[in-house]
Length: 268
Image (cartoon, rainbow, N blue to C red; front, side):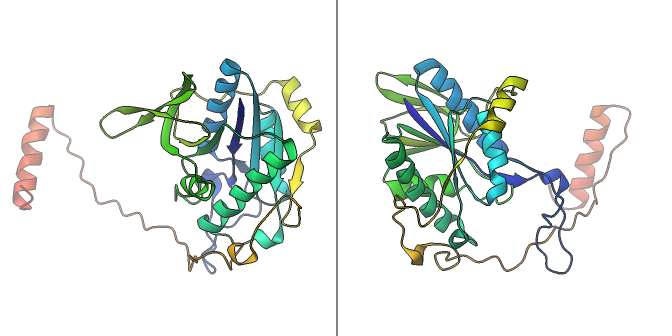
C-alpha cells in the first residue's frame, strides 16, 4: 500500500506574537513544529502501513527550513520525503496551495512510478485553521474524501474510516484511492528513537520546484495570482474578563443564586 501524508511546518502557537504595526505574525526567533493534526495523520498512516505493509511518503510545501519538519516525520516512520518549494508559490492561499500540492503529488507519483492509494492530511493547520486544503486537494485530484478521521482500517479492499461527529462517531467505507483528513486521535503520535533521529538527519530530501519537468502547473493558479483571498490584517482579539464566581456553601445554593441573577438580567 502506498500512503502519502501532507504535512506543514507551523509556528509554535505558544510562542506566537503579533507585530503591533504590521499586524502580522512575528516569525523571527519563533520555533517551528510539525502541525499537530498532521502529526496525528502521520501516526495513522504509519499504523496503517505497519498493519497492511507498504510505504509512507511525506510531502510539504514551504521554504528550505521545512526540511527539518520532514526529517522529523522520517524519524517516526515515514519512508521518504519531498519538499515542494519555489518562489513562484509564495503568497498562496488555500486554493492555490491545494492546487500546487495536487500537482506535486502527481509529480511524486511520476518520480516513484507508484500511485498513491491513500492521501492523509491533518484536518487543519493551527496557524490558519481553515480546514480547506485537504478537501480541496481531493477536488483537484477528483478523489473521494472523508474528513475528521480518528481511525482507519482496511476491510475487503476498502478503507473503513471512523470519524468524529457532534453526537458520537460515524463509520464510513470509501473506495481507493481516497483522501482522508485527520483530527485528534485517541492515541498520541510516537516519539523518535536516537537511532531513527540520526538516520533521519542523514536522509536526503528531494526538492520539487515549479520548473520540475513532472510539475504540470499553470502560472495563473500559483502564488498571489492564483489566490482569490487576501489577508488584509491579523489581530489578537481583546480578552475581557467579566465573569462572576459564585462562592456559596453548596452547589444547590449556588444554583439558586445563579437562577436569581439570570432572572434579574431577564435572561430566563
